[in-house]
Amino acid sequence: MPQKIGVVTGGGDCPGLNAVIRAIAKSASRRGWEVVGALGGYEGLLPPEKLRPLDYDCVGGLLARGGTILGTANRGKFSAKVGHGDSRRLPVELLEETKQAMKRLGLSALISIGGDGSLSIAQQMHEHGIPIIGVPKTIDNDLDGTFMTFGFDSAVSCATDAIDRLHTTAESHNRVMVLEVMGRYAGWIALYAGVAGGADVILIPEIPFSYESVCAKIREREESGRRFSIVVVAEGARQTGGDFVASDTQSGRGEARLGGIGAVVTAELEKQTGKEARCCVLGHLQRGGPPTTFDRALCSIFGAEAVELVAAGDFGKMVAYQGSRVVGIPIIEAVGKLKTVNPAGSLARTARALGICLGD
Ligand code: F6P
View 1 (spheres, rainbow, N blue to C red):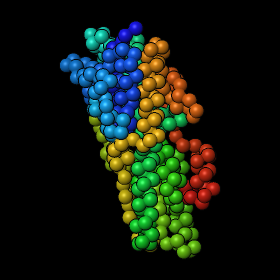
View 2: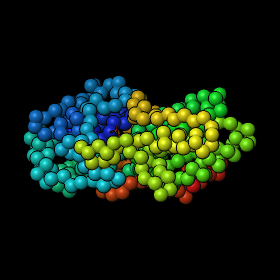
View 3: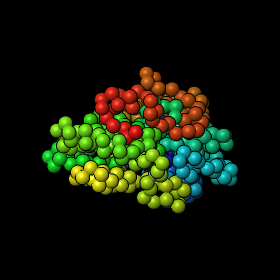
View 4: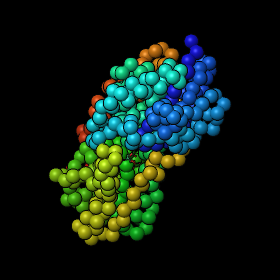
């Protein structure tokens, strides 16, 4: 049966959002469905509606384009994040208003592309009887139930490239170069990029660090003639017994904005080792630009699969990448808790086996 469906992108932007929008629009159009995108997140659905038609032809050229043509929001009426994995309940009136807005617009289903915040809203909408499907987006890779979120590979690729570049300058100056990467309370970006880039030290939130351990690694390298070191620090890394370093508590959003640990670590390493050290904060470069080949493929699969789930009426599900296949899992399974790095898991063990110091 022909349908009219809505697409929403919420939370921080991320490479691959447009590729998912494109895949949804193409596969839905081929079924004869109409697709509209809500501009600026869920609020675009409410009066005065801000919508954009997404037909087969208008999504050409989107596969490799960064950002989102729909715009996005991580604050406002539909903000659900209150910090460290927690989310708030939306007022039932707002859920009802959304349901009525969808009725008015003739939307038979919604596809929400987002991270834990947007998807926890999607779960609440599902519980309120709104037909909704989720697509897992975040460079942090911290959503449960899916081995990988889209955008993560692109962020890791950007961070690995940065490590490669820092290597040559670190070596030329015999310096310690500290790279601060994103990831919030999960160390996935730091750990994957650190291993892929051949870092000497990787500090992640899941493994509290001591300067003693990090300095010992730098001295060990010095004694063996390698007079430079590369330290990758996740923005959520913290010293044993210490707290997260936040640049702002973002009162409007209710969630701390992490950042600044790179500079703290750099100053301390310089003091304790006597070596010259510099800090590079990669920041939003990890979120911008075109998605990698892998992300383009994953986004295409996710988008097409989300449309399949709508066609099957299998609502309340999120598409999930589980190694050899992409399946629909209940959204609630993905948003209940953050997926963090297992300190005893295979990638952490690989890092240790290669002589990388994890700070403990
Ligand atoms: O969740 C994605 C992310 O990029 C985090 O890694 C980072 O902590 C946060 O968003 C930054 O958010 P903003 O763009 O609002 O500063």
